[in-house]
Length: 399
Image (cartoon, rainbow, N blue to C red; front, side):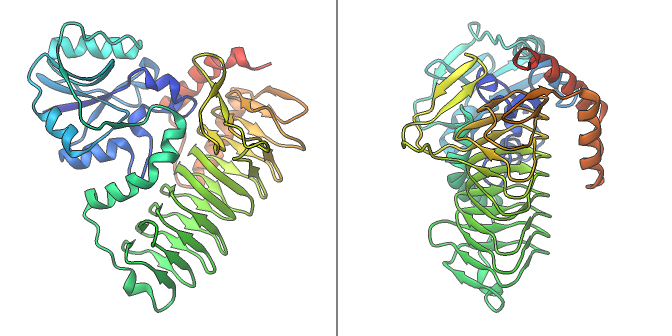
């Protein structure tokens, strides 16, 4: 059946990460949520998302359509419940809509509602889902759940442990090391006693690096020499990481190539952190962490003791940048200079502790294009339109 992953109210709770993508394009574990459903269904899904994202992330509506909440992490009981839905039935968990099935005319109407953030399912027969439901509802869910999702994705992808083949040139503990074709590893210590370690195709772990699972390194990514990686950690494809990290998720095409610490954090795409950038993940008084919420426009209690950086796409920091516990960096923000910048840095902000100004959008295009050109990619017209929308959306927060 034609499957559409839709954005629910969680989309705004996951800003700024979702400013540039539907929820299902979030990476948690080895795969994005989209990839998980594509693999399970054996077919490509499409997206029902905000109208300004729909030109890049298109929807495909057919005669019969299955809509699945894009923040939902699949499991066996959920898949069985979704498979059993008939036309005009809706699977719910309390007040949350998990999935619904409908014909083409109604599907087009629901796509329009979702684009405006006002999905109405009152005309569906409700089916209660009472089994365990795993989903991404807040930004910190991503780094908290990535360890379990690494394990689930290894099973989903049918990977076979092969760490024994790499023991000649590395020190390997445990029996859950999964290394894909073309990966280069020499003089590293890999410890999978507390969780699996997955190294993607053509990735590289340089000499002297120490890694504890659960951990995944995406294809064509690099761990620089003498790095210290604590799981659960996900480094997506085409990334470079050095220094020390613990329990982070880096989506793709981002770099933290030098010494410095980042922990309990989520980092979007096309970010770059200057040498010795450090992000606090624990308050000095050990009290629970509060983080900026775009819905309430205020700091929100997380109930967590550890929470570091939440960085949207195309963020940059200069050398020796210091970031407070639970700092939120919006899309295309650029931080540099001495001292701690604010804990909430709006999109398209430029500056540091002493002063923040608005980053001209033409300059943001230029920086993004220069970075993407190094990877043989370019900033599309769709990307520029998304930038324009975000620039206006976050303008009320900038001075």
